[in-house]
Length: 275
Ligand code: G3P
Ligand code: CA
Image (cartoon, rainbow, N blue to C red; front, side, top):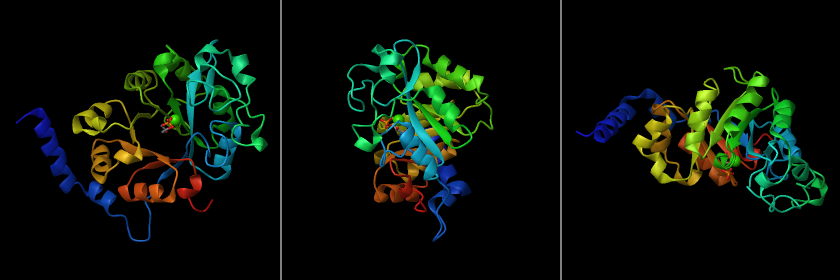
């Protein structure tokens, strides 16, 4: 029997007999499993993404984590913005990595969303760590790290300087679509949980999951590729599952049913209706 078949047979058997996988599939009636409520780029459903306004609102809404996208300016400052250009979410134009920090900081990152958010700036990574540590968890995505050689060391240094690399690290997780970068982060910060992001079904095979589990604590798929089997396989291999991006109550309810551990959402109130 091939290694692949052996692995598949082993996982299938263990899922039949593994009491944890059975529990994951059968939540008690009327009760929901405790799920981490992650505000995607902040409370993006109600404020401009990756701004202090959106992150403050996520805290106010009692989310468990904010998710942030980290890139780097031309002169080496770590900044929080999703796209690799500033065009969509600011009043400027150009590549993030080709603009100086002063140029990036002078942009208005709020008006595109609504006049009442005029004057919001692109935050720095260090500003976010200092403002929110201890108040809310921070899910740090390295966005396109292949564009920013050495960004892994720089992110690690910022966390180490603040003593945020410890097991009781005030809830810091680092994730990326770039798996090589995440392997590197795991080497640099072995005590910080690492996540891999994907929307590709090819990354959900047992072989792929097993490889991720050698360095990742979280497997974070887009919700379109989530199945109960995938959640159970990830759990069996010791990983938690966080899924994205929830923009409707139906999508949140689907992920609750699938038994995921974290829901990454524009609207934290879909995950915790108390807010
Ligand atoms: O945290 C998951 C999610 O942020 C990944 O997609 O494009 O919103 O960064 P994206
Ligand atoms: Ca992100």
